[in-house]
Length: 219
Ligand code: DX5
Ligand code: ZN
Image (cartoon, rainbow, N blue to C red; front, side, top):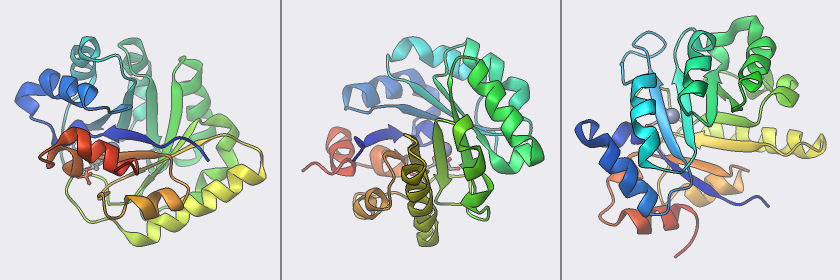
């Protein structure tokens, strides 16, 4: 059983006070800071890019978990690695038939490499490349905005992947992103997920520290 880590998404933070909110998350016991980079093309909205990640770097010692919702993630990966990203995740849908090559390239930048599948993409599309990534990000909502409801059928993808990794003796993180609440987190964990992304649940809580602990399964 892997340790459960919580990666609050700063998509739900105050964009006018991002450094302060990253410090609040760090003080509240977060394990990673999940940074949603949206380009307005892969998804309808634009959030921020490498300048924001660079500006946040001095505000926390936690790993920066950069989720690239962009159409050509390989073009900017080196820049994100250079300015302090620790994990760079690309979408399978953006990589077409060059997934293997792109994942290898990201690892060559000296960061951990993640690959994400949107709800409509079968997890089997990326499992053959499991040697080339460190983390699988299963999207449990359609990427693009926070505050949506978790799509239950995506839990099965985490189960399939966990079984696959165990069968092949691979130690891999499985991250799930979208609609995770204190109520459904136990089922997400039971499906084999060990990295939980949560935006609304953490930022909407009266007590951020308690919400993070509850997501982890602590009282
Ligand atoms: C959605 C983003 C998520 C989102 C999660 O496209 O990738 O990280 O912020 O937010 P909640 O937890 O509110 O669903
Ligand atoms: Zn995300």
